[in-house]
Image (cartoon, rainbow, N blue to C red):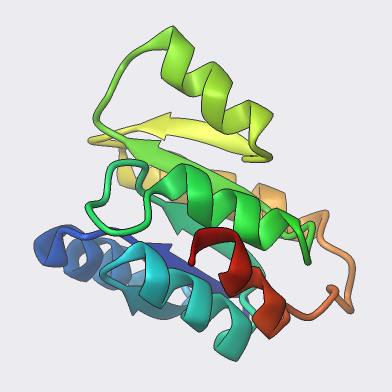
Length: 135
């Protein structure tokens, strides 16, 4: 089963996304802060990450950078912000794609299925050194 990590400081959003993804056949882990997201990525070794950008402790840009230091798993930024500069910034930090909230259920499921078909079968494990980037 494909493992998805959802990182968003909005608990309602993570609950909604988790329910949507589980009903679509994914195994889902959630984190409600950037720090928790980095730790969860290391612990659960997801196949793909769905990542909010604006979080109060460690933002999505920092989470993406930390993941990219140790892994090439797909990272999908999911944000309510429609700003070309922010889209460019997160893609430059290593995000695989950018989706705008609210994203239709079918689009999200199709995007994650598409991205995880291209993931190598043995992704590089996330190491504890990733926390250094945001400490």
